Image (tube, rainbow, N blue to C red; front, side, top):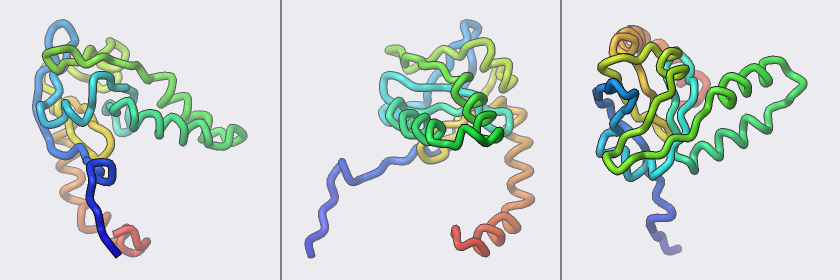
Length: 156
C-alpha cells in the first residue's frame, strides 16, 4: 500500500492565541498566521461563553449545514439555530487583513480595546481580553477533571 500526502489531504488547523486591538472604526486585524487559512471572506457570529466565533467561508458552510439538519421539532435545536444563524454576518477581509465587527456582535462579546483571537481548530474565537483571562483561569483549574471525564467517554 502506498501512502501519499498532498495538500488536499492535509487539514490545516487554526491554532494559537493572539492579542490585537479593535480600532475606533470597529476593525479587527487578523493575525498573519490566520490570514491564509481564513481566506478573503469570513463569517462571524455569536459564539458560546460570550465570545464570537469566526469561520472561514468553507468551514461556515459545514456548520450551517449541520444546523440546518437539526430536528426542527426540538426547541433546543431551534434555539441554537436562531442564536448562531441569525447572529451571523459575512465580512470581507481587507487588503490590510482586517475585518469589520458590527456593533451588535461587538456588544454581545463586550469587545473594546484589546481582544484575543484564539485559534481552536476550524474556527477562531474572538474574546474581550478580560473575559479570555477569566476563561483561561477557569479552564486551567478544571483541565485535569475535564480530561478525566473525556477520557472516560473515550474522547481522548
